[in-house]
Image (cartoon, rainbow, N blue to C red; front, side):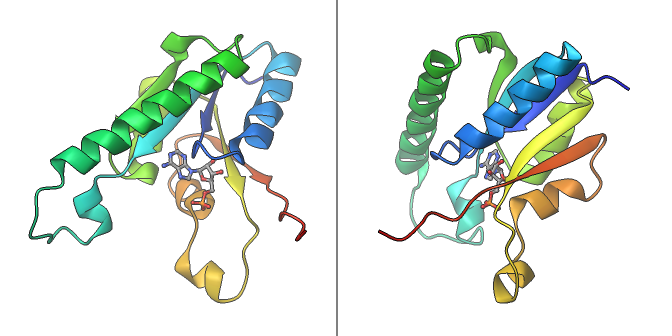
Length: 148
Ligand code: AMP
């Protein structure tokens, strides 16, 4: 079976490079299109929804910064069309699944830190995205940075 539309979830850190590169390799072999998605999590959500201050300005800064980083990715990977990238507010698992459905993606690619022990109990985005995914999910193992 050939993949036709690959959705790459990017956290906009330097770690998204190996994830995008793996998706591009698969896309090339399958003649598939690649779309990027980054989710900006509402700050109130991160603080448990009960914050006694106005977070709208901080939230806007967070969104603008994500937009700027997304722009850098377009420049770095010019074969990925701007129109094929998505910057959305929400909860990563929910938004990634919804977008994969809306855009009829047949593969979602995420990075995975291969956590174990306590860190695994706390969960990871890759784990979260896998559950209930509307299509195949590829978790690209991210290497730990060597200590200098
Ligand atoms: P984490 O489990 O948060 O360390 O992230 C692992 C992978 O999940 C990243 O390499 C991305 O593929 C994906 N991911 C994490 N956070 C986001 C986000 N806010 N938007 C899109 N993808 C994300």
